[in-house]
Structures are given as C-alpha cells and as structure tokens.
Length: 282
Ligand SMILES: [Zn+2]
Image (cartoon, rainbow, N blue to C red; front, side, top):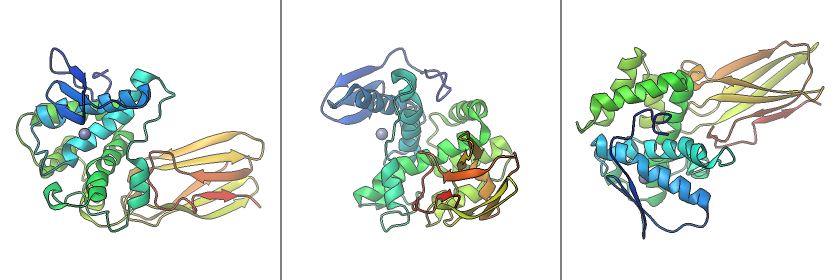
C-alpha cells in the first residue's frame, strides 16, 4: 500500500496498532481509541500510520507547523483508506469543516504558526483538511504517477533535516521547474475562501458556452457534471491551475447534444457557497 501512496516504501520492519485511549501517533506505533465502525478504524489507523513519515521520518516541527504533518496524514487517510476497505469507503475527514468555516473568522492563513492559534476550529481546519486539499489538488495537477515520484523525491531530499514551510514550497517549485507562487500565496498566506460558481450559460443549436467564475481567491479544480436531454452524462475536468491568472473560465460544449442540467463540484472540491453551482435548462 505504501508503494501506491505516498509512494515511499514503509521504512520500518513493523508497525504496532494499540487499542488504546487516544488518537495519537508515535514512531512505529498508533494509539487508537475504540471507534464505532470498522470504516472509522481504517480511517484512523491509516491517518496515524502516515505520521510515521510525517513528522517522524521527515523531522518537521510538529508543534510549530502542524499542517506539515497533519496535511499529509489527512490526504493519506483519504487515499489509503479505500485501498484497504474498498471503494465503498469515502473518507470525508475534515471536509465539512473547511466548507463551513472557510472565509469566516476561524479561517486564518495556514502559514500562521500553530503555536499562535488558540482556537480549536482554526487549528483543525488549518492543520488537517486545508493543507490536505492543496496536496490533493497538486496530485490532480501533476497526475498520480508524477506526484508519487515528486513525493518520494521530497521525502528523500528532506527526511531527518528539520525542513521548514519554505523548503516545502521551494522543493515542489524547483523539482517541477514551475513558479507555483500563485497557489502558495492564495492557499497558505492570504486570507480568503474557495467559491466557484456557474455565472452564465448560453445555449444555441446544440452548443453551449458555460462561464465558471472563481468568486473567492482560493483555487480549486473544476469538475463540471453535465446531463444531456437524451439522458447521457459527462464530467468535464480541469485542474486548479486554470485559476493561475484569471477568475473567469469558459467551457465550450459542441457535441450536438442539448444540455439539460449542470452541476459543479465533487466531494473534494471545497466551496463555501454551493447554491450557485447548479444550472437547469428552462
Ligand atoms: Zn494526525
């Protein structure tokens, strides 16, 4: 499983999972409290096992930069849990909280040191799902194989060296030879929220032009679910780099079908207002 994600072979001979009193990680040891279902147990255990890499193997400062390990543990449980349990498991850990609290007072920039955040909700969204989403969207942008290779290279480069957030940003920019400041700035440093909307739809002679607007500054992928009048369905996908330099993005459909309904967004596309994500033909 570790070869699939994070793409780095599990570095020790064994792992012990204790039916204990907390949800807490130690090197090669998970202390799991009893939970209701097997699904919950899988999600909790994959999360805690990811901590063997982040922060322990990588030696990041868990106290000061909580997101540098919890973000990886969160994407880890999102991806690994269905590999163990099966595809019927959909891990929603932290997602509802980011949808709800984004752009509100609790939503401080991720880069604020964890030691300075006293509010529990701020700690939770900043350390877990917000950085988890960025990693999820990077994986989408680079593709699973390339992201796996980058992650392994990142781990080999920085393991045990106590790297900082700036080393993390610099690694992914340098290793891909891309200027990723647009996403670091808007996801880690700026105040803001993610909010895509379908703002205009023009249909004519079985063609459609759909305008998607980014009403918030935080970039998220475009996943547009299209249902046609003949009952057929399609998903149109663009990764979050479409928002690198613009806040309006147009999608043209010219497949001789009539668009009946449109719905924007998947579970892992955080969005503070989903009311403007749908459209129905009159
Ligand atoms: Zn954790």
